[in-house]
Length: 321
Image (cartoon, rainbow, N blue to C red; front, side, top):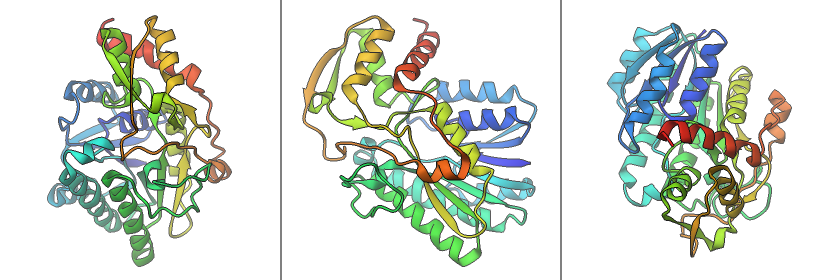
């Protein structure tokens, strides 16, 4: 089966593409290789993917209608799409809001238009985010919760994607699954994420900032568990319409525990500074995974105490430490 993976040079996209290639799928990878973080990391991920004969890479932006039309015309046998390309980062949406509308809203629309014109398409799986739960306080977050209180533009764009997907499922019968990811971490991760930036600061002897003393809680989810959920959902398209599923580790853990595990794995103490929680940050995230577990058998296998040392092993290798 030929599968288009957008954002294939990104953190989750790379891991998903690698898993699909390992089981014998043909993968078309699309990525614009932008400079939101070091493109050398993206190129290194691509180098690993290119080692597989089943991988073809196209450099382009999902918001470019012409490029997407050309790609799907050249690969009319695409049977599934895993749409992971997006402008990521909650705080960066305060710096460059236009990038989020271009990539996340227009990009999602372009993918939807391409998908509905692929005659053999069985399933479109796309990335949403736990950020859509916004100011919700009832734990755990469930897919049936109201999601009309976004606390960042990033969250608002991802909720817009979910609503557009609902409309396209209704209008064109396009089978879709939206996946609400909860704080993904692991090897080959994004340098802008807290766990990665904390590791760099600890090694460099620089201070890290913990909001509200590190008491904020996040549902940290190891990337291998995320991939298992993505692939499991991909293999089970809805009979009709669209659905939304959480993918998380099903536990909220304090950020200060993340720091403690990094200290242990790196063998160095962090220099900690405390600051008030920014307006874009929520107090806690905690995923109910009942729906995806019932559908796919999804069961997170990697606690934070196991995942962080695995990340640090890769981190040391990548940075030559």
